Length: 285
Length: 243
Picture 1 (cartoon, rainbow over the protein chains, first blue to last red):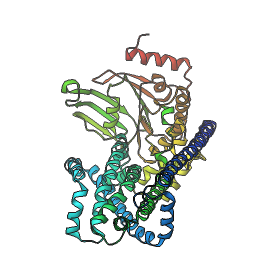
Picture 2: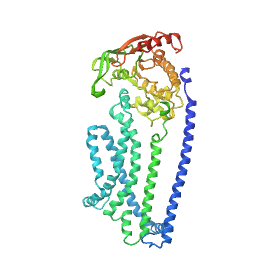
Picture 3: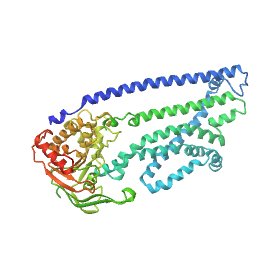
Picture 4: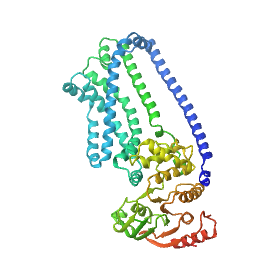
């Protein structure tokens, strides 16, 4: 009994914890430096734009200066907000639909390889359909409401989620199901305890790609037929020569997409922290 | 049923060899393990040792001969701990997959942590544990499966030499406390002699038992002990290693 306790290895583990903390610190300072660099590059680009717009004598209806865009964003804040709510709602709902389908479908395909072999090529085919062309057809069919927008967003968003989730599922160690069988686990329990958690990081990586596509899908669907939304707003603003407002709308939708990406990254850190932590397995093997 | 009985077992993998040739993993394999006995199986890589364990665990069926064994649980070479679950939840997995509720499974797994030198690491995730500790968590998971036969497939092969020796003496103590029927597959002859009541030597593929050594030595055994060294040499000779 005593002998069993004696061979515990707290020193090794403490040392490892120290290394991990150091690595984490180094990573954090690197991230800070990267963020500063990104801000610097952005400032240079905006500064160049401002100088060009102010000094070249270009018509503000063709290219408004950044300060004019900022002013339009402030003056039109109510209008921009109302339209962002519409588009944001479409994007969120679309991602939710795409995320659910993009997670459930790979799990089903993973469970049945004949199904996988027949459905996967069809999924690829669904991606070569030019969404730009079928959006008007969807409006003809589904009307001007939210339905065609969800279909368009779903079409552009769900494929990356399917691919990354399938990928995560296929990386499950083939020895694990074998071990689980000797532990008398049913197929359903193996799914619940091994495969679903293993697939979660795939869902998050896919969703991060998807949020960058979703606003494109939403705006496009709005262009084809809608009475509100950021896409609709831009479409109205340009012929009225309210170019600064159009730029402000672009700015605000981009900010929304960035915020969404940030939120997903945060959720990923909280919910699947194991997916990105450095593994020590290599060192012990 | 009593322990493990493997009689005249043949196992062929059809078309898995080079150019689609059949691979005969085992032919005429015999093995006995009485209840509570620790039998070590040694042999060169690829002699069908892992196949033998999967037959005992019921993961494969023999092409000829019979395998009769009490319910057996496999402990693979790699710990295969789930990276998202705590050490405690990994150990409790054996209960969870049989439908035990999370709280009850943890309650039953917890006492083992103190007994096996894992106290205080219940909440650590596998990535925070050393190789030896991970292997101990895997062993607790194996014990919690509640099966009379343990099929250990080179459980320490992935560890460094020092940790491996520690884990071998740890396993020797653990099996004194928790006696089970054990079939231990290893390519480490010393490990076999230090841990087992009996050592079965297998031939290269197609694998079958070609020698059997009784290890009637008191425990714990030191690897430097003259009798241990002598048995090790005999086992190596049976394996065909140059003296």
